[in-house]
Image (cartoon, rainbow, N blue to C red):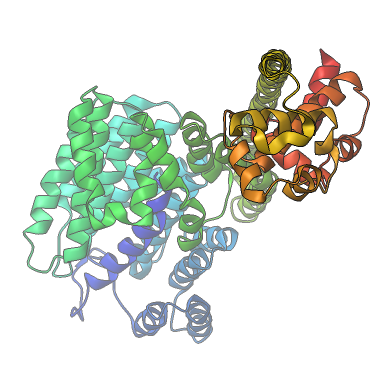
Length: 588
């Protein structure tokens, strides 16, 4: 069953069952069993406490009423189960619900409370993947309901057959599951509505869950169940008291399910159209709606959109009161990992993998504790079935552990492969960059030699007219060559404090004259840029000649004020750090 609807189903069923009896002081009986659930004075007080939303208070009131004899044991245990469920104490919830249905012959006046507590128990057992006990409990309750002829039983039977079908589906008994789902639909059609419209809303959710199961299993009948959802929604929308927000939510769910069915059938464009309409609804924009749409997005290979939606996963888990158990890991975290990976978001995929590794151990421990508590309760309440339950739980635990260990091993392997590939890519890239740096330096040196020869020839044509002291008589381009020769030949660039003032002192030229000269005939259009190029080239030559030299020594020898400035400039020019360049050259 879809985990996100577990709480909704239980609360809707509670509300529908009790509100259906508003205004009825007496009930018609069929034999000794009332036609509908009778609300006693104790029930009214307990439910008033329950609908405050303070479930600790609800639990305390229930205990007090039970002690005072205002509530029977069956009713009290049923209410306690609901309270513990809402407080997130699932183990105590299961214990109370099992206690409520411990007897095979419930008191006639508590029959419907007994059935209702059992239905809630089946829902939770299914969500806990305790399929064996869920199936046996559901069949036992169905046998009880077959003995009465009351419209009330349709509400419970549709949910019981839904859970039974889900259980059979998980156990690969698809033919049996199909029969159970069809039985659920039969009882949906027979469920009497009331002015609150809660029974009709609960019936829609039953069909939506069945459609979701068929879609997740890629079964062709999924389209039939979506059509049934749509038909029931039309009936609900026609009800004068139907909740407007709920109608819009249900309509959005129909659009999402149609998108999934079309995608499953290869009708990609039609699926995308339905999804666009769904995505424009308020529900589609909500956190729950975004998370629920991820299955379609992944199926449609729209991984980036799915990855965007999964950024809200942690918030969704907190708001719905869930915890990261094994089911949540498999249903949400693993798809989140796949979405980010195939969307090319390697860092996000890695974080998702680390999150799985982080919550896996605690989830497995909680599952073991839950299984142990379950076995203890079965031993206390159903001693005759203890050995069978232990064997079943042992097999289930072994399966869970095997799957979990396999998932963890695959994650570790995937992470290792990812890191190994990244290292290989980085090393290959560094080798290419290092080769390009060396080749570029050799080319620049050859080019400088050619320019020196040309400059010497130009100066020789004028004889001895131009001396080093005649800088003022040179053109800007000639002055540029002379100044560069001066800087390079005397290695002025290796002085950390070297700047324009140094050239002014050496040549007697003005600041503007030197600036104009460096703006001529060079790819380096400023003195600082030219000096930085010389220092970086010198650093590369130094590291090539002395592979063991430290980066700090290279930065000092090259004229940089500190190693950080050197590394920053080196990376900006060459795309790698000096350390990476040295290591790459050593490994060649």
